[in-house]
Image (cartoon, rainbow, N blue to C red):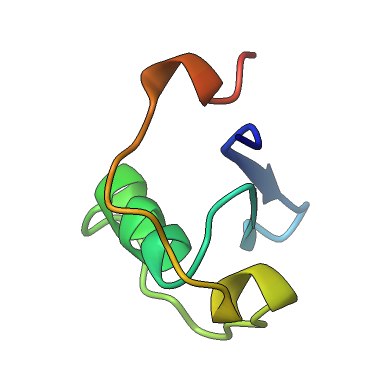
Length: 67
């Protein structure tokens, strides 16, 4: 199973950019919403090939991104 990772970048103007990898289907959007909550509103979403792949219903904590 691929490692699931969310990378957050904040530029000099305070804009926040988030990139996900290892998530399948809409799981990436759900995980972003869980992580960021009401702090930000998604403005623009660029979907990758992973977005269109079928998601599994279980998440293995061992495969989460390690910082």
